[in-house]
Amino acid sequence: MKIPYGESNFKKVISGGYVYIDKTAYIAQLEAAGSYQILLRPRRFGKSLFVSMLEHYYDVKRSGEFDALFGKLCIGQHPTPLKNSYQVLLMDFSGIATGAHELLIQNFDHKVSNAIRAFLVRYGYPDSAQREIDTETSPQARISAFFRLASAHKILLLIDEYDHFANSLLVEDRTLFQSVMGKGGFVRSFYEVLKSATMTGVLDRLFITGVTPLMLDSLTSGFNMTENLSTHRDFNTVMGFTHAETRQLLQPLVNQCGLDMDTLMRDVSDWYNGYRFYPDTKETVFNSDMVLYFAKNFDSANCTYPERMLDENIASDYRKIMALFNIGDTDANYQVLDAIINGGEVVALQQRKFELDRHFGRDEFISLLAYMGFVTITGKRFMATVFTIPNHVIRELYFSYFKVELEQRNQLRIEELPLRAAIETLALQGELQPLATEMERVLQSLSNRDLIKLDEKHIKTLLLTLLYQFPIYFIQSEREMGRKYPDVMLIERSPFAVKHQHLIELKYAKKGDGDSAWEAKRLEGITQVQGYLQLPAIAALPKLSAWLLVTDGERIGVYKQSATGILHG
Image 1 (tube, rainbow, N blue to C red):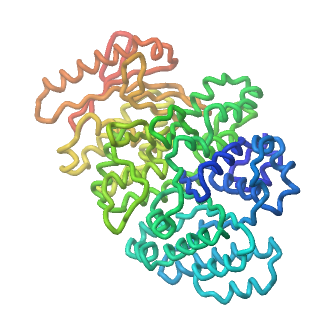
Image 2 (spheres, rainbow, N blue to C red):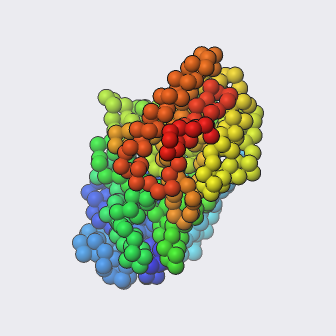
Image 3 (cartoon, rainbow, N blue to C red):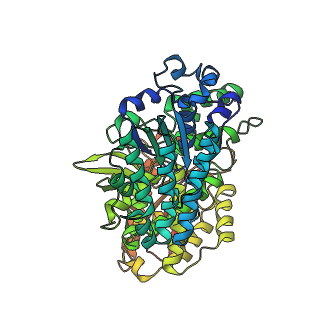
């Protein structure tokens, strides 16, 4: 297979023989939904390829290529009357450097100018048209001049990554953000020109993609005719891959290596699936770029998974977005982070746009996390929406970020080398004590404030934070198994061959309650561990060691299951 990981040019994907998951059926649905639309999805979700598909479908200059590009696809069998009927203006606002006000305007203007120049050349406009554009001195003036020059035609405007620079700007300089986005700012003025162009009829259709609604207040204040389809029932799976589409993509791996499809799909689902963009849908969506990365980096010679289940480039993108945790009340945001990784879910009123000059509170912050893909919709609770972590990739990123927060807030450093050695000892020698020693070192360094609220959930979070720094295991936390919920399961995952898998139960005996409380927690934990080991799904696991950790917040007792019972480690 030729896997189009990182490819966003539709023509290259189709003509180059790459695998393509057909999303063209949504063209007719978009046309039925209106003329001016915005659709938001998390980073690396296939937005640019989708925009490129629209460009090639509607471009009047590509009518001769229609059969070659679309003939075998859904829309090729059922084309709409609007196919190949527009001059298409494509704008991509990614890569705009932020900084001083003048630099930002200059970079935005450069993007607008280059897009218009490419359009004029492509459709054979005279040189005088470009000279007229060049005489203008602002992006809103240039786009206004463009629509005057193109007034004899109907234009389709496609805008990709409309908010890319805004996400960075909001973290770096909120005052500058509000000045360029607010009333009188060049961004709002730019979109006011688009609204005028719809009234004259020259801008016939508009499709905008991005990640967050941070700019929607600016956009819709100037251009209030747009339809936001981001949380619409009919467009839940417009980007990303469905379960069926992912099976289709992975079938050649199954055929080549003799893999069990159900096992493969379960593993890929755990890592990359879980997104919902509408509360009442049962269909979850896979992050398409993550699935494509897996398929491209699957070791066909040895039939093993990639060592890194997430491309470092994607991880870097998400880490940059983590900077948005600094928007608004950072302590309140940290409490949301704590609730997500300790409680597993958060509840908020989902926001469709943000009015940052008025308020940015808990509901706005959680909604922002959802748009970025750090949490996803799992249901409704009265008027509010319930959000959870979508998959293992995002959970891993959370714990990487939580380690940084833990170190900064408590002025401690979690040493990499001894932690790596402890996890390797766990995997190869089956000994938990070195990892418990690292946990003790961190616990003894925590601030009094954190110790006051310390409980069993926080002890487990610390353990998971350490484990996720070197994720050679598939780490499961409170996964339902026979209606029981073991605290932590460390399961062997391809391509790593470990000599031991582990079940770990944690108990917290509050410091000051004495030895009797410790012993009571120890006996309670013994009973739970023995109950877990009776479950068929756990009993069937090879190379399994079962452990109980008891702690009072400073010291940790390590107890291991043996044939004769629970022994001190």
